[in-house]
Each structure stands twice: as structure tokens, then as C-alpha cells.
Image 1 (cartoon, rainbow, N blue to C red):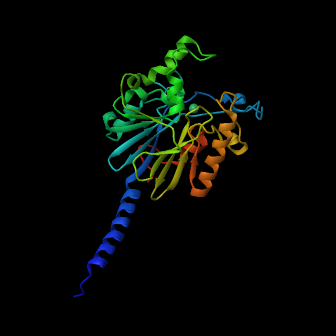
Image 2: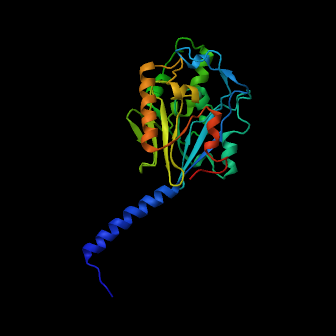
Image 3: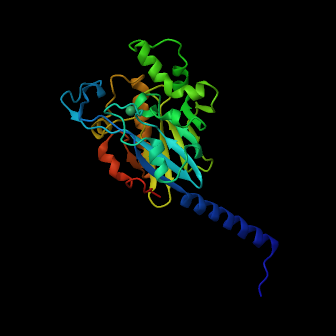
Length: 279
Ligand SMILES: [Zn+2]
């Protein structure tokens, strides 16, 4: 019977340790899309182009949220429209959708928001125990004590309301670096993509079978704008927006990633229909 030297055993352990960890990591990550509402009818997207590229274009848009399962841990990415009875509200709340797969809201460890706009934060307060991951620039904007120019007092209060649990001492992590490796193994990373708002982020999810997936946040809103570097008139920085689009496109190419534009219904079918997960 062959015996192995201590050195060979150590090497074997290293190799096995490496590969077991890698395959366990890859197999452990899954991604699902949750319905988060959206406008009930096509809307004019003229204002989504500061170069007046498509003045007559109307498009149906959707609001999308995503659940990332990493082993037994969960990240919820964006929380969509509030359950406010408006035509843009989803048919089922995030809590109801998660209940279909037996996930208690308290089991959501992280809630990450691409940015601070209401169509991404509406149901945030349903997860008050989660650690909020948000770009520092967005968090700082939310600290304003008065409504920014063009926002009513009521609108200002409504904009800040979803963040109440974290203003009141909930766990919040403000992100100011290039990326945030959510679970510490590189499989799920929030990527800094400022410009739409000061602290805007996208999300990279690396799946074993599906491959790399990039969720846009609102670095772009629909295919036509993505193709032409279209920048909405209300973005906080045109220069940052262009740089972020450039970064996003290069990331997608280098990683061979599936790009999912969160507001574009043409991208919904890139993931399985909930409650199924991409793996
Ligand atoms: Zn949006």
C-alpha cells in the first residue's frame, strides 16, 4: 500500500480544500426575480434621453427585485414599488412572494438597494432587521433636512419614509469603494456605478450553471438607451453616468455576463419564473 509523505498529504489537502471550496461556493448561489410592480401602461421615455434621442418613443417598463440565496443566507436586491394601492404596486408584496418559498423576512440578512429612488425602495421597511447596503452618496442625500429643489415637502417625506428603520438605528453599511463583496467569496458583488444618483450601484452574481449575471440597477433603463449610451435628463451627473455605462459594458464583456436591465420587460425572461431560481 503506497504511503504518502507529509508534504504530499499537505499538497493534496491544499488542492482538495481549494477545489471543494470553489465548487461548494458556485453550487450554493442562486438568483430569482421577484415582481415589484411597474407602470400599468406604456410611458413616454422622452425624458430618459438628455440628447432628445427618442422624443416619440413609449415603452412598457417593469419594476424588478431579486433574491440571492447564498447557502442559507439571503440578499434582497431592490424592493420595488410600495404596496400603496396605486396602479404601479405589485399584485403580491415581497413578504407574500417570499412566503411562497418559505423565506421569513427575518431571514433576509442583507437588503441592498441600487439607489434611493422610490421604485427601488418601496418595500424596504418590510425588512427592518436586515443590514441595509447603500451607496454612501445616496445615504448622505437622504440625510437632508429639507426637500431638494423641485421636490414637495410631502414628496420629501415619502422619499425618506422607507429608510425609517435605519434612521432609527438599524444596521446600515454605506458603500464608498469600488465594490462590496457581499458574502466574502466574490460570488455576489455590489459594483459602484454612480451618475444616476451619487451612490448608485449594480449587482454582479456569479452562478455555477448560468454563469455571470449583471443586474443594472438604473445605470440604464431599456435596450435603446443601453445601445446608444442614453442618459436620462434627471441623472445627477452626466459624466459619471457615461463612465459607469462604460465600466458596466466592459465588465459585461470581460465576464461574458448576462446583462439584465431591471426596468426592461424584454429582459424578464432571462431568469426563470419565480419561484424557480437560476443557479
Ligand atoms: Zn428605477
